[in-house]
Length: 98
Figure (cartoon, one colour):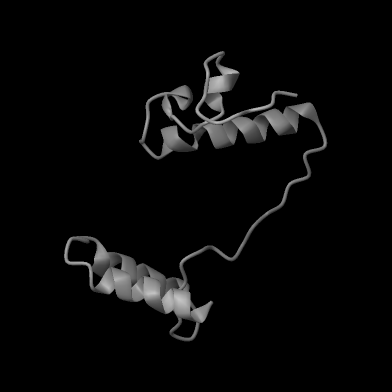
């Protein structure tokens, strides 16, 4: 696993087209411990999906991620999202509605 992280850092460092490399490398260094770069967040907060309301809340959150990221204007505009199926459209991926 350590080799993969080194490879990713090297790929960023050596990419002449990456205009954000200085910023990214600084962020990875600050996020890690003991001089080790960190790519992913270590914390997670599992939530039990004990009701239909909570399940719908999580589905809405996932569907809205591309909107929040500024990739699309509406959740169903994102081609790989199941939001298309929930909006009555045909998505690119097979979704089984329960």
